[in-house]
Length: 90
Image 1 (cartoon, rainbow, N blue to C red):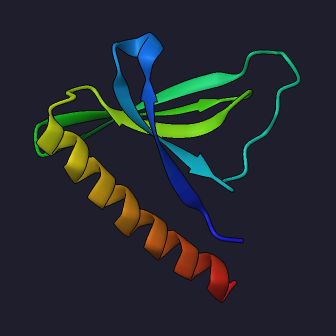
Image 2: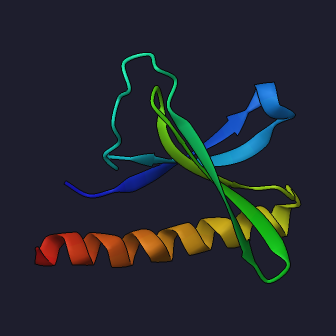
């Protein structure tokens, strides 16, 4: 099974573009509301990698300019390609 992503526009967060990871395991905390946010910084851009027990993993850019979101999508594709190759090798 490959890890993929789904591009999602979150209307509850001012139309923030988010990339939800599909087939990426996460532990369901059974309503203990487990959740964590990891801030990532690259090229003066801040991303937030979010894990939540109810919906899994996603990443988004704090800045939502079109070119920043496009760059994040390209990076997500590259990372998932490498990850899936490593998963196949195991």
